[in-house]
Image (cartoon, rainbow, N blue to C red; front, side, top):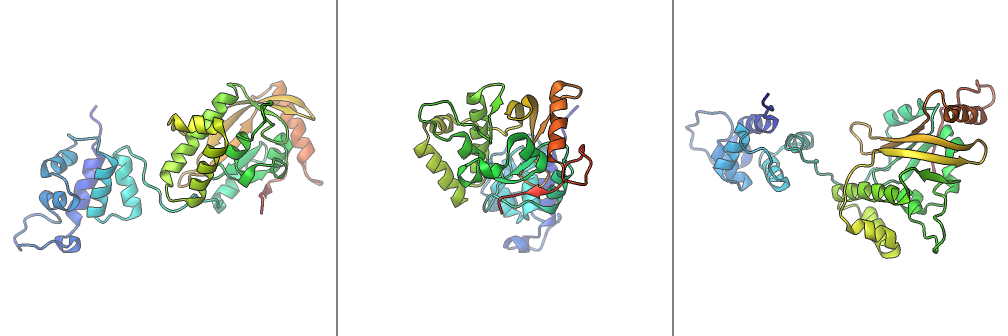
Amino acid sequence: MATMNHFGIALRGWRERMSPQDSGLETDGDRRIPGLRREELARLAGLSVDYVVRLEQGRARHPSTQVVTALARALRLDRSERDHLFRCARLAPPATGNVSRQMPARVHRLVSRLQDDPAAVYAADWTLIGWNAMWSAAVGDPRTYGWDECNLVAGMFRSSGGRAREPIAAWPVLCWAGDDVEEEDLVADLRVTAAAYPHDGRLVSFVDHMRRNNPRFARLWSNGTARTHVGDRKTIEHPLVGNVALDLDVLIPVGTDLRIVTYTAEAETTDAEKMNALRAVCHPPGRSPSRPTSEISSFG
């Protein structure tokens, strides 16, 4: 089955809706089609007419970021339309401004309803911005972690002076695949964010500081790997219930680039029983021991 030419459909539709006057072109008064001609769009975008034709017909299916940017500018697309055109080209939409470290109300509601399991919200640069009671019960209160700038990457790459790596949380949380894999995953994810927010001064300074002061980070940053971190499997060395094996998942709410990180245990296992014990520890007075508080904490 042939793949639908979403890029060409959008491009032609937006070309035909745009009047020459809106684009600043002079018209000859004899026009048999609405909107811009292909040669007019090609001239405005700095492309060949043949290439515009092939894009609309679906014979050219992999335009570059520069081409899509030029077409979006020529067609005067708003941000949502520009982002759609990028996605039709299977490219990530360009981000502007700074990484958001705000938690929208709908994300707050979502995390508050995840009260049965540890959940925390991170900005796209892995700055921790909120967590629930079960998170504190499972891995300790984040206010005790000692991460620079409340950032997971900074905490992960703390200098150990040649000794074993310091616990990432209030107590050790170990990746089944090993520390090296965990570190590479986080750096690769951070690189995706850095590329999307090249003008975020705080993020640029953070990466520069990490590169200059941590050889492990600098080595991983130099390899160029870029991918979104989706999760792994962890063992929490808990001081009350002992070792707990949990799945860590990273969820990105639609319309944001926040990371919701959750820990869950496989049902009907010893690990699930240990998580039930932690729920009983963190519930407030007057509530059922099986239902911890839905309050979301933060550094503010």
